Image 1 (cartoon, rainbow, N blue to C red):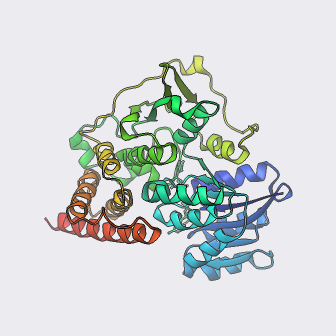
Image 2 (cartoon, rainbow, N blue to C red; image 1 turned 45 degrees about the vertical axis):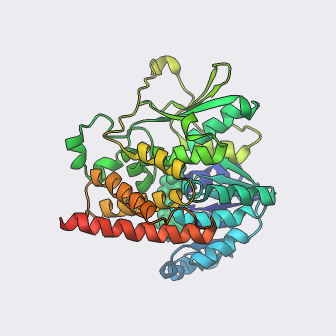
Image 3 (tube, helix red, strand yellow; image 1 turned 135 degrees about the vertical axis):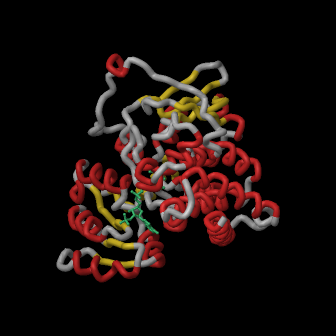
Amino acid sequence: MRRVSIFGATGSIGVNTADLIAKAGGADAFDVVALSGGRNVALLADQARRLKAEIAVTAFDDCLEPLRAALAGSGVAAAAGSAALLEAAARPADWVMSAIVGAAGLAPGMRALAHGGTLALANKESMVCAGPLMRAEAARHGATILPVDSEHSAIFQALTGERRADAERVILTASGGPFRDWPAERLARATVAEAMAHPNWRMGQRISIDSASLFNKAMEVIEARELFDFSPGQIEVLIHPQSIVHALVGFADGGLMAHLGPPDMRHAIGYALNWPDRAALPVARLDLAEIARLDFHAPDEARFPALRLARGVMQAGGLAGAAFNAAKESALDAFLAGQIGFADMAPLVEVTLDKLMAQGDLTGATFTLDSVLATDHLARRTTQEAASRLNQS
Ligand code: NDP
């Protein structure tokens, strides 16, 4: 039986993954090795019991006792903390879902690559912070990284059966989020609840707000570069409000291969779970006559500067991706805490990148997991300081 683990099992991607595994036979069809979560201990314990996992791990030490209590008598081991997460990731598995949110997903995902199996990668932060390390680790152990982000799964599927050299560009689509048509003055006053109200996708809080600011798309542009080795100039973004076409790949003969599907992550997760086969999935079938029209237009980078920042990050290379992600996460924390406004996030990220770049902190250093994590800390501190200054002014 295939041995599978889910990191971030209690999140939006993780719950869908656990449900697909349960629908595909659960503990009768898979050896479920490790499930991880954060503070949602009740859900984690419930999933671990249902899937008969070997071990359930919460990321937070203070959640260990409640997790132990919830698992009492189940035969599932309980553990907590970052060392326990790494130990769980080190348990041999053929297929691992990486769906922790944020840079916290990097180390467990990297550790799981050492099994030489499949890493289903939802945690785009890993590729943005440490794409070259992830690819090198996968190559060293003969592991496969399968994208779970819907756009990257779409690119992966469009490239399947093609010669990579024949692909000359990729187009990632973006719904434009809830603020697609908002004027700049209104953006400045946007609330957390408004930013979370994504028109098409139901996702975790952080990625929903990143979608509203287009930081999510900016991350995806960098992720596409790292996963598929396209140059920055070959990666385009189109606003597509219906979220039906997830990505397109353009080939040397002028042909464009588009991937279409309903906005439902169970397609991309299920594709990664069944790859290289396809299995029936519980997703709606598109009725194109009912949809009737598909709209596309260029993004407005004046209102949404994140895409421009991503291009600078790709040009800089090295540790710029780690700084970009950490600054973005830290700016989002400040927005969630009510410290800064929605429209302050991009300028804060830019100020941080400019400062670290000018200090020479992002170039020259050896590119290792340690230097990535050190850059992550430095960028968070720099962004927090800038946020405090902004708040006082
Ligand atoms: P959620 O916020 O819904 O879930 C995040 C998961 O990570 C939960 O299991 C959470 O635990 C756990 N977690 C939170 N903080 C930590 C921490 N410090 N250390 C370890 N685990 C932690 O996120 P999503 O499922 O929306 O997203 C997960 C990843 O997938 C992100 O990288 C996102 O960008 C990516 N992604 C998500 C998509 C979506 O549709 N949701 C689409 C494409 C990519 P708990 O909830 O128990 O506290």
